[in-house]
Length: 500
Image 1 (cartoon, rainbow, N blue to C red):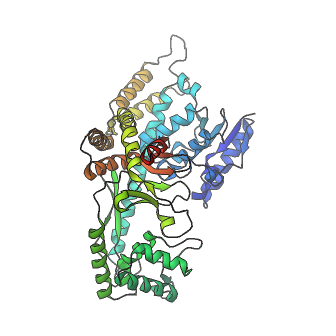
Image 2: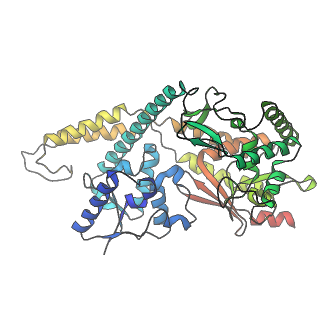
């Protein structure tokens, strides 16, 4: 008996209201009943959270989660994934979306789109390769629609900001404030505002963020979120937040050189109630910058903004310990918030990375596909659609037989044009990543290694990977690639050599 999985159910945490849920659920149930499939109602993205593969949905979407479930053996081979349309799977770039779809199909899972009953399986795509072209066009259109919606949303926020001095823009605010909906203004939460003032006082006296977080945890001072502990990052975020003096800095996202960048707009003063004086805020910022300049070390942390603790998933930061050199430490443990404190010498980790990364980066560089403008693709797809609509009485498969009076030439010509359009498609975003990888490969080959080379390698790694999980128990670093794949770099041998 074949198992079927409703993609809606697997992504249910993001779709909790509206008629869309009812419609997609009924479509999946009807299809399963019609074809005698067992519709799985247990596996969800919540139940999948226990897997080590979890966490890649930020980049890959729930399609990446499902692929990880297949890889982990939670979804048996020869299963069927039911979706309303392909755009329900992903609205990411067409390159990433189709790559994930292909990986699921090659893993032995058939994808069925319920709206048009198209089948994406190894057998079906061998019979009619144009199905891949159809999928690519749909992913491109879905991505372009999302970009259009994003543009309209940004325009709406531009209009809202013009009234920010007299009207609340959004209920979102710092955790020491809350929105009084009746009076349409923000009010202070006294006990939390007192904690903010205490943090500013301690920073002004010269205490480090780590010392402050330890003191807050030791005194059992409640955080803004139940079950969480104070960390160096949470304290520093408050100490540099301009909302403490009532200033709101709106931001927007835009694409720059192939990456999404968060950029600030003009600050809006007196938007929030002030909890610390402007003079104190400026003194704290001056002390913060002095501490940063005094402690800045040109070590060159290749895993900066990527490294996570294998035990608690907290950020792993680099510290300097005199003659022993730099060490990697879990920020959660350093703040005394529960994880076991341990210092991992960084130099052996760096040696392991320098040995293994060239092959990993070169392999990724060689796998780049070159794609670009969508105009020819859309025109070619429309040509195929027109050719098929002109002969609705015929089997649309170009491999089908037919009598002497059957003319498939218009359809074949349209499909050939579409194939050529796909082959000539250029994706500009890959050029930026390829340039970063080229620079990183040159740096890794340099005999003179310093912080600047490590920084360039870090830029390349962040363009490929979402996180680097440092697993000290097994002596490996798990690199989570943006397409959902996981690569491993062993480092235990380098650590042992350093000790000996």
